[in-house]
Amino acid sequence: IVRTTSGVTTSLANIREWIRRIGGMHTLIPHESRIPRPDGDEGWNLFKSAPLSEWLILVSVCVSISVFDMVFLQRLPSTFAVHCAVLVVWMFIAVLYGIAFQFRSNEQMALEWF
Image (tube, rainbow, N blue to C red; front, side, top):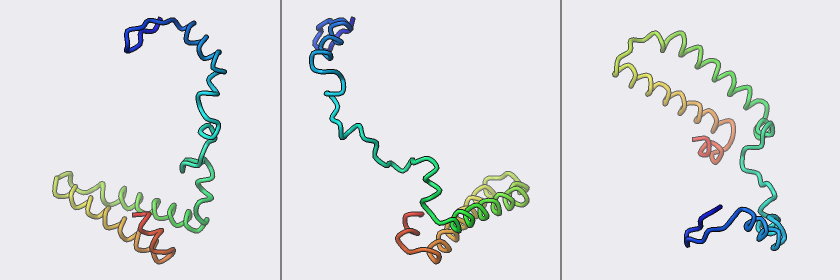
């Protein structure tokens, strides 16, 4: 039993009968809206979105800065000032990567990266 906002009580059987009479659920949703559209989450096709050289550069940069973090940054004292300085370091690295990316590609792609 389902109570609607107008206070009318109906049963699930009544709802199923109403859906059957109008031709099923597929008539409530237009066919075009059921077609999946690309939304940026295309699975493994993500790796086709950029050349292999860009993926290799990204992986090598990520590995390099991870090693830099483990060897140097994590050994610094745990104070507020050091945490702020490390945050500035990471932002500086991101800006450097963006500038390097702009030289390898075009300005529009670099702005999208930022």
